Length: 270
Image (cartoon, rainbow, N blue to C red; front, side, top):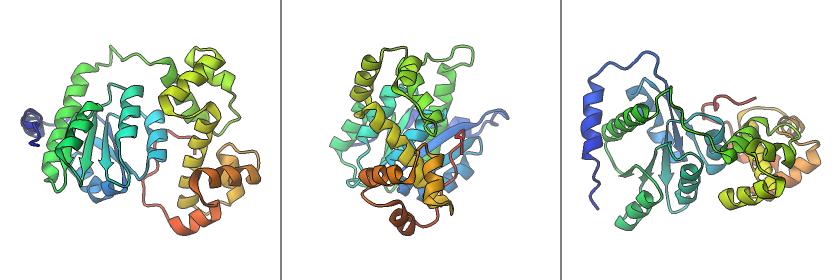
């Protein structure tokens, strides 16, 4: 399947020649370890952008909910398909453009990506400057349609998810999240389950364990310190939830993961 992105390429070429506005700082979120291969050179090609690479869906989902991403690049592979995350992102924030990068591309895969809401699609190997031009064009189009004087409306569910993403380390109750969404408890939990596949408790644990994985990988804090920083009352409960969601213990995870090479996500409490 031939990718029809020539208009984006042409617009990107024109934008590359223009001086970038001094006050512009677009956040580009790259999801998948494969992004480490091109994230740094891409950042040097796009000085107006802050490029963050996050390895897996847990951290990506939390970062997407808590930060004002302007563009998302999802790396698709047979081991880690991107379509569930793509659908979730487009459902929660339809205005945020999402691109798909894959090394196992087929015509069927490309069609599936666009049907799920992707704005562009790249099959490896590709020239990095083509990706750069497409990003420039997409961000420019997004800026034109999202003026500061006309912000896009925020849904009740999105408000609640942003609240959870910011306050997960606190003893949050279902009532508080439902109030942020402007719904009853039962209505909110039913809608949350429908949109994310998780109950309120499961989703909150998902956020907490995603952050715990980052803390365990990034520093030397004890398991108890990590547990308390992520909203758990005691280490025993933390260990049980961590093992249930990851299949391993916090200590074993830290030993296997080693030090993190990722940039710290912005706008988070720790």
